[in-house]
Image 1 (spheres, rainbow, N blue to C red):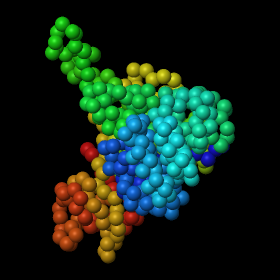
Image 2: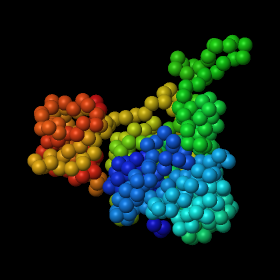
Image 3: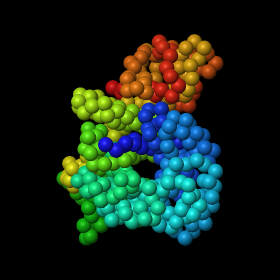
Image 4: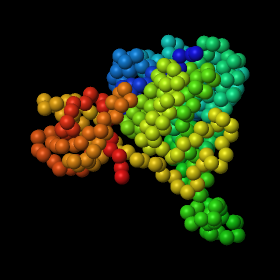
Length: 408
């Protein structure tokens, strides 16, 4: 069986480090220009250097998304950007555009080229075309089934790599090439500025009844017509590996450290368990289901993997996430009293039960017995985000460990 990579998104330097600690084999990031997540924090060159050094020290690769569809006005900037990237030890660039690919081959000949899902990669002839252009890897269109992926693997060379999304938000448009955002707001999804109109509520208006909006389904809420459930394939690791995938990709460069830690750790354990034995993997299926639901999600679907989705793959009554756990912070260090220190992300109080996510898949249930600020003053609660806190939970915790609490 092929060695299969777990590829995790990182929207910031802190999240990259979280992804690496919780089991990523590779992470993908965006720079400050020319990626499809302009609203993410993204990476400066200094952030890239620090993040790449951290990842490489942990035997983890870093891929950079430069996957916009370029206009004439973008090309000089992309050329300058690639020239600058010569000083950064990036492992691969993720591209969609033919012109950008040619610039990458010219200016970054030592860097692997991966072809983005945006390029509509739906058949083995397309994979072979990209291979002839110098690409090492192609990311499959999200509209492919496991049977189609298996057929692609059978028709491409062994050293041609195949990557596919296995978890995260699904786009209503074919391979993510959406025009709704540009039409409604003037912000082009294919230039990195998507406003996610697929999550908005829609109704029908009859042309002679101007201003009278009719629900598409008969209720008082309208309907979220384009609002897909989130993809989740953690219960189908055997099928993904048997299809010959080289990389299992998680969507979410806009997501928090808690989301990234939860998803990375769950898929890492699932892959490692299956490598131990199929029986070990099957025995832990309840754990994967329980853990993967501890981050934000919109209910789950298997997307196109087992055939075209039906009406059950959509959510018609709302566009909100299910969010059962709150992110409290990431341990920065241990103080002289052995207490973890972290920058607070959300409110918690003395006496509350919280949970520490260990890197090996275990969760520690802990009770907060004391909270102190940087000056050593006691606090009954921690209501102010970004405050550095010393928290007594009865034990030390490793740096990078994520803290969360269950909402009731």
